[in-house]
Length: 300
Image (cartoon, rainbow, N blue to C red):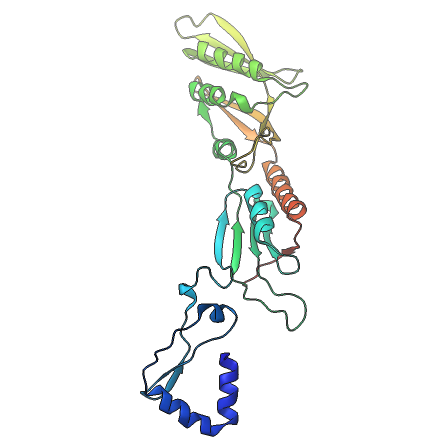
């Protein structure tokens, strides 16, 4: 007999209370049918001291839980979408989005047993999938060194380590061009820089002097601007397609101080690139999952 029916009969039939109290004094010797428990029937245990009624939880003895619960944290957008499709159901799965596009921060909380429309379609809201995209290694590398002055050899090493990120744009140096510049930096490492002049073509000419012969001088052309293409967020673990890279223009800056050349780069409006990448992930999840996307915090 369901627990609700037992309580209703106790209220309507006071004489039944005495029978129950009498039965409670005897040890219970019958088995509890777990399948009946799965169908909604709940055994009631009456404890003699104070005659307190308790409803034991036998769910842990079942082969499987009565319903899905738990919290899963996914590492990429594709995995998040797969989980929603695998476990989500129409009209009860909702994805909540919290976004600060200017800072490139987006996080998703999917409730796979969310409330439905109407007063009698409530749900437990305790089966959740979470996803917060993490920045890629490339993004962290370039933003960490953004606007940071480096010595000549240090800057050359940085460019050499990250040549794969330099993209081919008409009118801007290629990876090969940048590599030649790096080699020129290494060849002139022992020389003292005297001055720099900006060219009409957009490049920069550095004039340097050999430390052993101050009369001798040479010129080396470097580029004022170049472009990189890097992923903003961590790419899917099982991705088979090419890496999705976002273009960021870079300005090459310099300072000559006490005969030493300091070089650095400045990313041009990287905040807009971050915002675009965040919006792309939101659009991907909204289109691929097929479930409603709601702006807000489901547990605020």
